[in-house]
Image 1 (tube, rainbow, N blue to C red):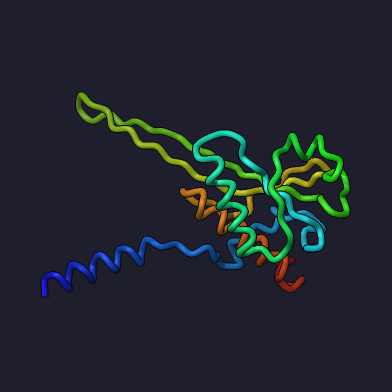
Image 2 (tube, one colour):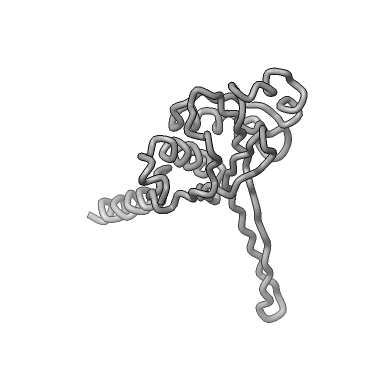
Length: 170
């Protein structure tokens, strides 16, 4: 009986810790989406990480997330590739780039003669318009793990482009 009790607690904690990629429509930041983003015939470019912790793994997960949740074509590229390769200059095929926006901080608290340190990290995504050069506001996909933010960003973007115009205008 004790084993079943502990198993139920562990299972409950495990389920409670799972976070869905889906977010309510009211959380979607309409100012994050430029005009024309609804056109899924264009190839959406995903910013490819070239350095940092587990860049290859983050790129792979980003691509998989968008292939799973986003219904248009996607491609990974660095900003250097976007600026130098001729194919990215074709705004009828390539116009928008999904870029990450990460931030963090550290706080220290003195307790008696010792210090307690805590740090936080969050990541969200923005859309960069190649034609206008404008980076739009955060989508609202922020999470403390890159994988969750990537899943949410892909889901939010797909949700936004598939919303009825009256819902998207709110």
